[in-house]
Image 1: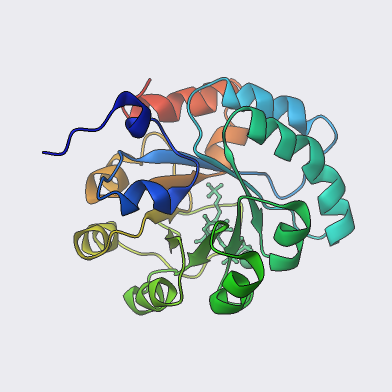
Image 2 (image 1 turned 180 degrees about the horizontal axis):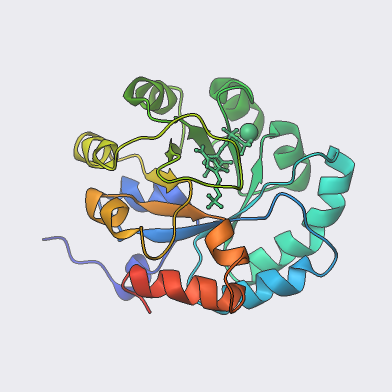
Length: 230
Ligand SMILES: Cc1ncc(COP(=O)(O)OP(=O)(O)O)c(N)n1
Ligand SMILES: Cc1nc(C(=O)O)sc1CCOP(=O)(O)O
Ligand SMILES: [Mg+2]
């Protein structure tokens, strides 16, 4: 077995770097913002990050233009940098480039990952939505993605979804490929175990944290427990 120093084992916000060393870290939390936020959201994010380790935060705002997202992003990106949380922009390569984000998440209709790589360079993480499709995931890997996302594993009110993969797709992926995989869609601390056991590298979560009855800190803490770090 390879020996890793404590430093090497520390969580690394750059997804793929961890895996290129031939080491698959245990499953980590990837937080997605609510689709609409207000000025107080930076306080809520700070609270959430106090609940336990969060590997990545995705700013996923819908229905507003890039300038408005950029304004909202500024304090959130600063907080993420202070807390060593990867800051990921949803949907827009141009915005990710403009903000100097750590990554961009692209759906199947959000642009070509090869173009994104050309624009963003080798250091920016590119994640691709693959629904329930092994084919889309292999295509994303060939196109140079840093992670593939499967979902929606469970019913969700955060987004209208049309695909329902089985957890076994995560096991299939992790057996064959080193590239990290993300499980998304209706994930809660209670229903997460089959996804973790099947091999998810990240759980991407929105509602179960932001709508937690005891607040986002309790939401993240509940995931930390489910992930074995609480
Ligand atoms: C981690 C993660 N996985 C999947 C998605 C969904 O992306 P997409 O299919 O482009 O849908 P929208 O989020 O843009 O509505 C995601 N954002 N993040
Ligand atoms: C953003 C997103 N993408 C999905 C997909 O299936 O690709 S499901 C989803 C919503 C995630 O939020 P929640 O944790 O509240 O279900
Ligand atoms: Mg999208």
